[in-house]
Length: 373
Image (cartoon, rainbow, N blue to C red; front, side, top):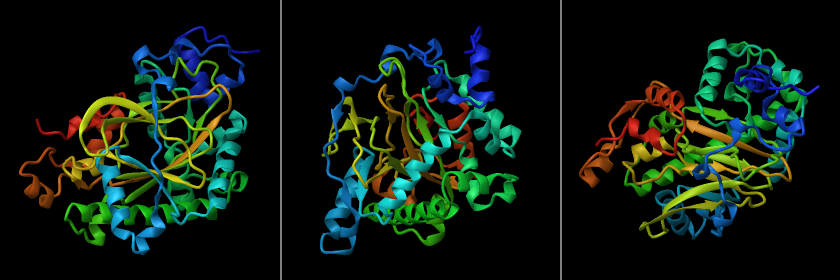
C-alpha cells in the first residue's frame, strides 16, 4: 500500500530517513509531483526559452602539439565567460566512463534497504547535517545522490571512516579499481587545467599551493528519476560549486543548464540559460567559487541547474576538487597587484564551506560571504 504522506514529516521521513529517496516517490507511480517539489515559476526551467551551447569541445590532446597556445586561449576564454566547457581526449577511456554510468544506475536501482546498508558508519552528525540542508529548502529537488563520504572516502580509506560496506558497494556496482582510476585521471587533468589558468593570470604556483587548492577530492553519484511533471520542478536548483574545479560525467539524457551573463568577448548581456548537451566521450569542466575568489573575479564560477525528464532517468557523476578545510583562500597577490583592488577578502575554506551548506542555495549568493563591498 502506498504511503499517505498525511503531513510534511511523513514525506520527509519516507524520502530521507527511510532511505527511499526521490526514486521511491517516482516508483509509486505518482501522476503529479508532490506540492513540496513544485517550484515557483521563476525557478522552473523552460526548455523552449533556453539556448543550446553549440561550442565544440576542447581537445586536450592538442596541448602537446603546435596548437597548444590556441587550446590554452580556448580554456581561459571559457573560464572567463561561461565558466563551463567540455573536453575530449582527456585521458579517461570511454569504456571506463560507460562503466561508471552503468554503476550509478545499478546503485540507485537497488531497493531502499539495500542502499541504506551503505549508510552504516556515516556519522550521525554528517547525516543530520544533510537533513538540515534539505529541511531548509522551501521547495525540494527531484533528485537523489550519494553522500560524498559514501563514495570517495570509502574507496580510499574505508576503515578510517568506519565504513564497513565499501567492498560490498563496489563489488556490487563497480570495482574499486575503476572508481579510483577515474578519480586519478580526473585529478591529473584538474591539476593541468589549474596550471594553465594560473599561467594565464601571470602566476606560477608551486606544487604545494596547487595541492592546497585541490587537496580534497569528492565524488558524487547523482540520480534524477523519471518525473511526471518536469515543467513544475527541478532536478537541482540554481547554484555554483564551492570548490576549485568540477569534472562532470553526464549520461546521454541531458538536462544541464548554465546561466550566461557575458558573451564570449567578455561583454555583459541579458542573462539567459544555456543547455549544455551531452557529447559522447566528453567530460564537462566547470569553474568553482574558489577559483573565482583566487583569480579576483577573472574566472567565473558557473551558476547552473538541472532539469528533470518524464522519459528516462538520468545520472551524472561529478568529481569535486576543493581546498582542504584549513586552507585560506583569497585573491592571489599578483592578480590584486595587476587589478589594483581586491574584490574578495581572505577566508578559511572551512568557514566558507559551512556558510555554503548552512544556507539554502540561491544562485551565487555564497560568494557574498567573501566579497568586499
